[in-house]
Length: 307
Length: 328
Ligand SMILES: Nc1ncnc2c1ncn2[C@@H]1O[C@H](COP(=O)(O)OP(=O)(O)OP(=O)(O)O)[C@@H](O)[C@H]1O
Ligand code: SF4
Ligand SMILES: [Mg+2]
Image (cartoon, rainbow over all chains, first blue to last red; front, side):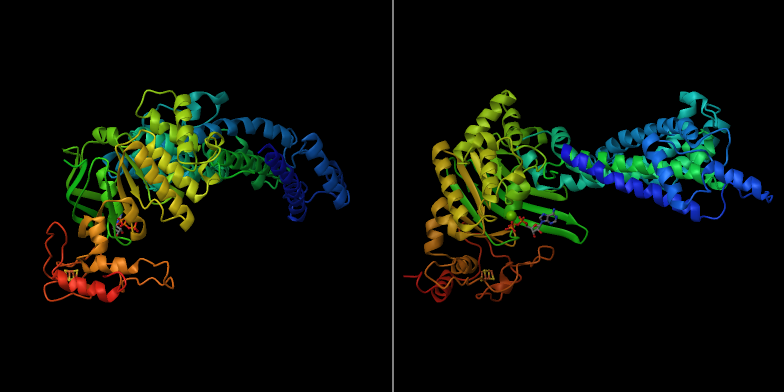
């Protein structure tokens, strides 16, 4: 397993490298850059700016320098847009924010979704099941960009309990709405997935064997059914992670939380390619790492998989 | 009083396509220390009969009738009562050893929990006992095997594990649902021999379910022949084999492959009945060479030995025609 993990990480390195190079090429090929604006700048100024970003160098040299900076110094260079903040500064500001509410959303989705699905399956066709299914269908058809305004209307405008946005150093009252808005639809998906997978598992031969030993239902579920029923859910965590990163763009925008998604949107709207690249590479690396974790968890649960 | 008595058992499954009556009016019994076989082709309701005894039917299944254990009706008894019987007094081996063990758990833990569930023994003690039982079912290197997962076992070895699991609590009755069908011929013989040995050793009663008449003769004193969810014929195994009184039994016996023959299986022509649309009369009618006027519409009564409208001499004549060397 350790060998496998090391192998996976070694394989991830060229993948990331390609990601870095391709992002850079896309940036070079894309129209516009730090020198494009409404006004035409004098040639001397353009040359000056290009020199500052290394854009006057031959392409191979630019790529080489960029890769070297990213890989060896974890330095994504200056922002094309903002003079006051480097790409690293933006990541340092935004990433902890996104990580905080993202991790909480993730935990909420799993910690509520899984038990909800299990209970619904074990109590299939009872009011508990209908309630759980109804809730998750409802939550699933409300994407975060619909969820967020609804939550604000209820909890800020009507009840006045929670602030409509801002971060405030990650104060609990600022966290609640972003976490719920981001996590709910994933929680619903996880609940539904858990329920159907649990129902299928409960039909399998080895569950009948466990019951034939005289074990009470609770033990049968916890000891025999839970692990196998979790496998599809674990596979779904990879896409969940990516989905949450995408969702965080909406959350940052709507709640002004100041997370990485906000910087990304801003960069995209203003052709700040270096910032976009930096954030994209960071997200790519995290996705690779997360998927490795998912696969390792899978293998840890299923003894038939040995790497 | 028999140890186990199944009385007029019926099992119905609710399905989207309507109700399926898998078992219809089955009665049979197993004596203390005795052995009864239930034979019949695939889909005849054998497994569902066995599941009903321990309340292990699928969620969409309902059972009616009576299942008496030592005189007490345990059919549809509360889970609390059934749990004290399951594994403790009645052990059960399932048809498919490949899916009957939990692939995510070590074999040792799966065995041990069968013991810890019923006795106040420690896990360690339970595992030691499990190791001894693996020895008893002749699994080599039992101690190391306890730490392995089911996928590391062959089909025959898994079935031995299932047997060991069912025997751990020294049950008074073992229900063996096709314990050998999924296995190859040499392993089949070993498993049957093992069951016979263990039965002698523990003095346990056996309800053997099979579609293979070949393994019944040596293993069981009583035989029940099922078709389409109903009992066609039942009685002492020796009688049934020597002088079958039901056309279906005759067909089954003719289908037993003979070692000296060319290996051809004289299977009964035709398809099993559609359980969701049962005939009001005898389910065997479409395939029966002796079918006549009342068969499709009038249900033949069970007279204690057989349920058939045809006179016994006609059945004897059929037997003589189908298997001349078997009749005197
Ligand atoms: N959960 C279920 N829902 C609907 N029908 C079912 C269900 N379980 C079993 N049946 C039906 O019940 C009938 C009898 O099944 P059973 O398993 O008892 O047959 P069997 O005699 O054991 O056959 P085999 O030799 O194939 O094991 C079959 O027609 C099967 O399709
Ligand atoms: S009742 Fe009729 S159809 Fe059924 S087995 Fe007897 S003769 Fe054949
Ligand atoms: Mg069966």
